[in-house]
Image (cartoon, rainbow, N blue to C red; front, side, top):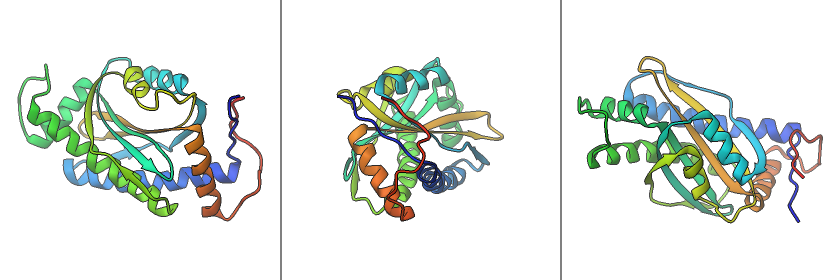
Length: 214
């Protein structure tokens, strides 16, 4: 039987605020790396089937994606992913390396640079979230992966029927570069995450659900 999970309005607001803190810290880190203003969207949080989460991201990026992914384990488990449309990731790496190499492919050095960007951003965001919610989690070594957005987001938690999907879009104002930070965890981890949110706001009531999947 599929598990049902709801976040009431207060929990949803608290969840968005916690991730805003994490993404804000990540934006500061990226700003220092590229010397550009980083604009962010309000986190999008949905509880939905894993396959739909992958399809949702594919709608946002319909080209080949260069991504950095990290697995987290502990009080809850899932995957954190930093994604860029391929050409934009190359532009970002060229900005970091101050290099004028062709855009056709990522060299080993460029992959390492993108992995470092992912490591800084994902750890800044994820570290803030886990600290605020008092979770004990380990995060794996970052890995570079290339493919469609759907393929990348289906590669982790392959056995998970449901997922909590959290997405933030960001862009570099003066360099026309944009990307996505997503966190996908299975429904059991999402339930534990909800308990952390409830403790954070001191609210264990059910409230009014804002998103529901049966």
